[in-house]
Length: 549
Image (cartoon, rainbow, N blue to C red; front, side, top):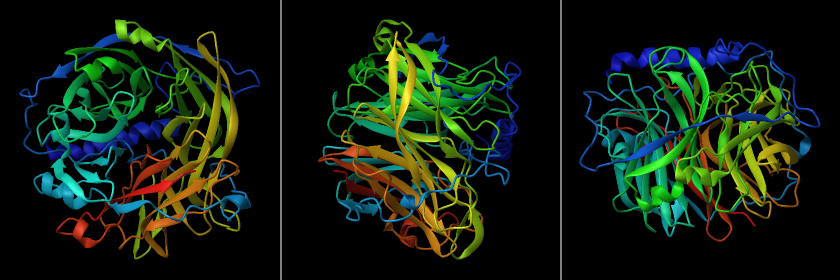
C-alpha cells in the first residue's frame, strides 16, 4: 500500500479504540449490564460456515509498490486514565516470598530490526509483534517483518527472511501480527498472519502449515477472506489475529476494524478444522462467529483462545472487560464445544460467562533510561492464554501500585481459571489462583505466560524504568506458591528506544519446551549489531528458555 495511507489507518485504529474507551459501542449496543453473580448468566452465540482455500505456491499475491508501515491498532486511545481504578499489589508480589528461577537454559538474541530492514528493501518497521514456536531442536521466531530459524542454543540455521515468504505473498504486501505453534500430536507447525490488499478493500487471514518435524522445507498456505463488507465503516478486516489450538481445531480470534475509517465492529472467531490443514486438503472447513459480546450492550476486544498440547474437554478462551477505560474486576470465560462439527461443515457451540477477578486497569506510559520519551505500553487487553492441568491461564498488562511504592507503575495481572461445563456450554468458572507481577520502581509490559500441568508457570515481559534501558525479563511461579517471584532480568537493554519511536510490543510470546520448560520471547534493545544501520529503529527480541518444575 502507498505510504501516504499510513497515517489515515493509524488514526482510524486509534479512533476505534477511543470509541471503546469512551463507552461508545456500535448502534446495536445500548446499555451496560452488571458484573457476574454466583450463578453467572450464560451467553450463547450463533455462527456461520465457510471454507479455507489452499493457495497454490505459484499464485503469489501481486506485489505493491511500497509496503505500508501501519502496524495494527495499538496506537490507541484506550490507554491509561488518571481516573481509572488502579490495584495495589500485596507484598508477596514484589518480595522474594515465591521461589525464583534465575537460571536460564537458553538465552540469545532473536529476530531484530536489522533483520527486518535487510529483508524488507531497507524499509523499517515497529513494533516486532513476535511469535515463537519450538520443537525438535528448532526455534522459529516470526516478527514484523522478518523471521529466523534458530537451533535451541541460538545458532541461526536459516534466515533472516522476509516474513511474507512464509505465507506465499509478495515481499511488499502488507501483513502484520504473526504467531506460530508446533503441534506435537500431529508433528505440524502452524503460523498465522493478517493480510491487506493494495487497494484497501480486502482483509485476509493467512495460515501457513508444515506437516513435518522441522520448519525448514515448504509450507502449505491457506487463505480465509476475512473481509466484512456490510458493517460500520466497512469493508472491514480482522486485526491482530490471536491463535489457539487443541486436539480438534485451530482457533483464531481478531478485532474487526474498518480498513479506511475509525469504526470498530467488535471481536470475531474462526474455528478451523485442524485435520484438514495437516492433510494439506485443497479446501478446509471452518466456522465463523462475529460480533462477540460477553456482556450484552458492550463491545470489547477479542478474547484469547488457549494454546495447549493436552486434550481439553472444550477449547477455552479468556477476555478482559474494561469497556470504559476505568478499570474492571471481571473477566470473560468462553468455551467452544461440539468441536468435531467443523470437520463436516457444521458449527460448534460457543458460549461464555463473566466471573469476578482481581482489579486491573490500562497501564501508564513507561519511562526509560537515557531518553525523555516514554514507551507506548498498549492497553489492558487479555494477552496469551494457555490450557494446562485442567485449568486455563491468562494474563494482561495493568496499572498497579507495587508494594512499598507510592507511584502507579505498569505490571501484569494473571489468572488461573477452572471452567465448568454443563449441557455443552460453559456455565461457570472458579478462580483457582490470581495475582500480580510487579516491582517497586519498575515497569513490566506485555506479559505472556506458559504453565505446566503441575501448576508451575513462567511469565515473560519487557522491564524498563527511568534508571533502566528496556530489557528482557521474566518471573516464575512454583506450584505451591501463591504468586510469581520477583522479576529476573535475562538480558539488559543496550540503550533507550529511538527518540522518534514510542510504540512497543505489541505482544510477547511463550510456549512449552521439552523437559518441563518454557520458551519465552519479548522485545528489548539489543546490541548495535542487531539494530538498523541508520539507528532509526533499534528494537530487538530476546529468546529465553527457563525450567518450570
